[in-house]
Length: 83
Image (cartoon, rainbow, N blue to C red; front, side, top):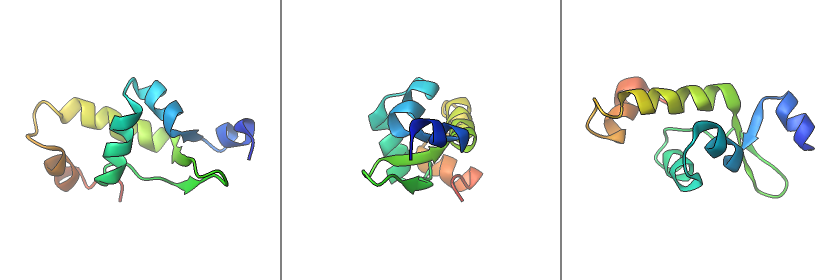
């Protein structure tokens, strides 16, 4: 799949998500590992692909509530993220 095809489908690689969200790639990986973000699919090369709108929306929600909610686990439980 070409970059153009990915973007037309609204899919971003992890590095593109990190850039859009102004976060480190390691943070995106961590959020994915603990279930806050959902990988939609993988490329043939193994790159994680995320749906742009959904992923950025979840990240913005995490940023918004992170200071008010004690832990990421609480965020996951309270907001049923990535379901």
